Amino acid sequence: MDELIDIVDENGNYTGKTCLKSEAHKHGYFHPTIHVWLYTSDYKILLQKRALTKKVFPGLWDISVAGHIAAGENIKIAAVREVKEEIDFDILPENLHKIGTRKHMVNHPNGIIDNEFHHVFIAELSTPIEELTLQQEEVAALKLFSLETILHTKNYENLLLPQYQDYYSFVHKHILNILT
Image 1 (cartoon, rainbow, N blue to C red):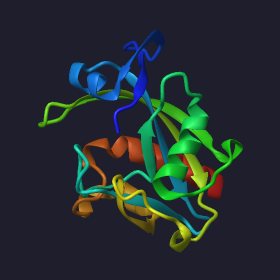
Image 2 (tube, one colour):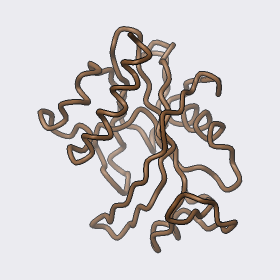
Image 3 (cartoon, rainbow, N blue to C red):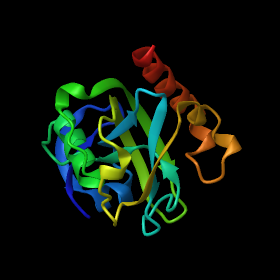
Image 4 (cartoon, rainbow, N blue to C red):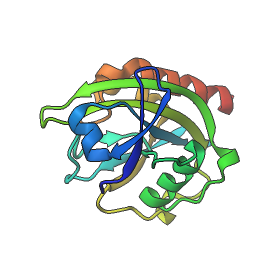
């Protein structure tokens, strides 16, 4: 879905300008997004398999929930909204723990230029996975993996992206800090 988003500068500062998501991806404008990593108390992490119709990384096992922040939208509210939209999980803003903001720049073979600032959250999944409902155009499947899996992405086909291992280690460390 094409939506109106805020444009930020190369340092993540809001410029006061907006554009459609498709325009940001066409021209490489920096914009804010959210990443929500959901874990369980028994050291599992929820990953979603991206729908095969996605323009980038179709069929890849990826972050629990990720999405764009609408123009003028509060970052935590955007995270709550995306979690509800993609997997039908109701989460309270106070249960989202922001662990950082990550600058991400990648040019995809299909011409999409992803220049984003990911606002990264972790939260406990307090609902059984069987009770979650997938947004079909975004998510093909959900699965709980051992938390350690994200440290060893090179050992798994189609699971996350090995070039971002430092990022996954950062997330893993923060989840472990909460669980231990």
